[in-house]
Length: 216
Image (cartoon, rainbow, N blue to C red; front, side, top):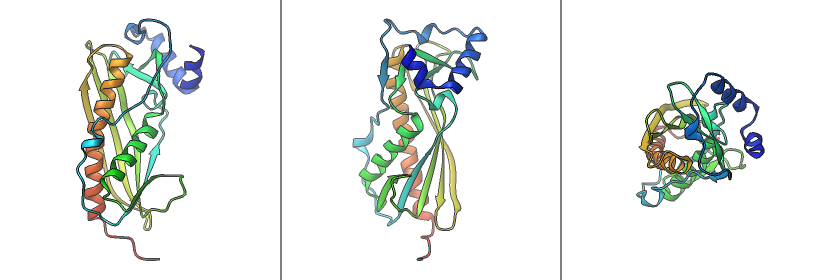
């Protein structure tokens, strides 16, 4: 349990404590056994992505970390609107915003639409930047076994002119097969893949419509 508390961090612990004080039922967050399980978000549809026409643009993807429990190492769930709690014996291997950013890099790189696609901070130049933030990333357990809910917001920025090219929110839900952390993790990966479908198509469409930055 100590390692889980260290991973979640003080802001998230405060949120969980607040929820517990409100008498939120947390039975669904206690999987059988007491061994800590760590899950990784997977792109279950990456191999089926069709090829696209090259656009000659260089894209940098910049995940935007959020203080929300949804975008933390905790695997979040909810039993009521606007309430969150964390699975007691389960965590993510990566913060959802960072992992989704990397999966989007992998997805777009495989499609070869952009000349290059990299994460911010890798020292690689780009004329476009995609800021990616996580709004919802949780197991909605209001009814059992529940639903995986993923929602993100993306901003496409022209790095040369600092102009906002486009901004849009994307979301997807997937039924959870079993009301436990493993079922929630699998469904959240499936929902993430559907969001990545939307993000990839949106990024390519808006990059094609944006005028290339002037030569410097």
